Image (cartoon, rainbow, N blue to C red):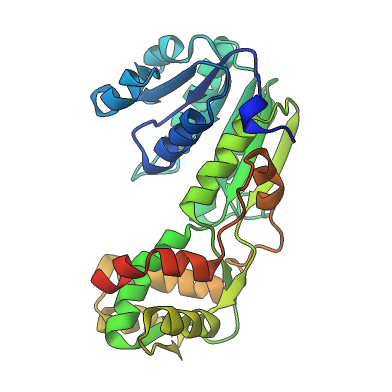
Length: 307
């Protein structure tokens, strides 16, 4: 792969959802490494990106629920990062939003779309979290443009919600068994997206973006205990009692349901990613390597302890 510093894509790069956390990190990476192409950021809230506009980014209004707003937003782009939208009723709304964006990209001559998908979008029967991503992947395949589908694992930032509860209670609930989770730092997903956007690949590919460590709850609790300086015990709990266990640790009812569902998915093997293309992708960013889980915990130690 070529270096991001020397990449020339022959047109503008477009990053959608520019005011979101992932897209913002991608934009900062592109600005820092100064690719020799103009940069477009589309967003529903352009005023939130005034600072980027002052740094030379073309900030444009785009609302995927308003297809008529997209042609002007995408004009001049040759490669696009389509960051999956965050909507409470997905699917089907999110699939429609993504379809609107992909169709507008086609009309505007975008030659390559990088899409942030989800790790399990390619399984035979994707679950609710992955179903809309699987549908969006199919829309991309039905078009003529090149694409890079990045199947991101769950963010390691999930631990910033679960570990403060485990630290205070001394317990990390988990489903029985030795299921393992493969997490990835959001910053690594941003770096992978930036690399895919500028590395010059013009065909069609599906890449796994995941960390390189698969940890079960016991290994995670042990690592967290060492990094945080607080004893945490992984407590195996029957699946139908996991929500109550998380509630006892201090989780809100809504988060307890989410954490319990993830614990059950971990036990069934759905959270373990067998391989990752992240390290290969990051070769486009000199000096960048995947973030290990211990390094992630150490970097966020103050946040976990202060939460």
